[in-house]
Amino acid sequence: MVPDSNMKSYTILFVFATTVAVALASTSDSVETIRQVVEIHRLRSQTGSAGYPIPQLDCLSWRLAVESNNLRHWKLVPKQCEDYLEAIENWEETIDDIINNFEKQHQRKLLDNIFYY
Image (cartoon, rainbow, N blue to C red):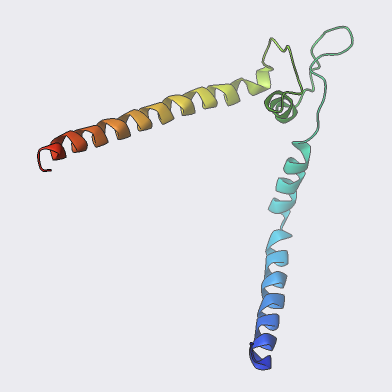
């Protein structure tokens, strides 16, 4: 069991840490961040009833709809989302390069050490 004096100090420390965390989280920058996070989950149809694209289509809602497979049979990527797809393609190439280099380095080490054993 923890003595009462330690329990009181832990309680005071917890209250102080919580107060500091709330104070830091309530800055104007974090309010804008929270506002952006809330907007991520808005889902809108990609096209109107006549099949024309909606100009206010939010890229974040389109990404969420596509990645969760709620938007099917889409053919065009909204212009706002082109940068996002380019970044993903570049990231995949970078990951492939990292994996290939890692494999080559370890294959060389294994082949060099075979004669030792």
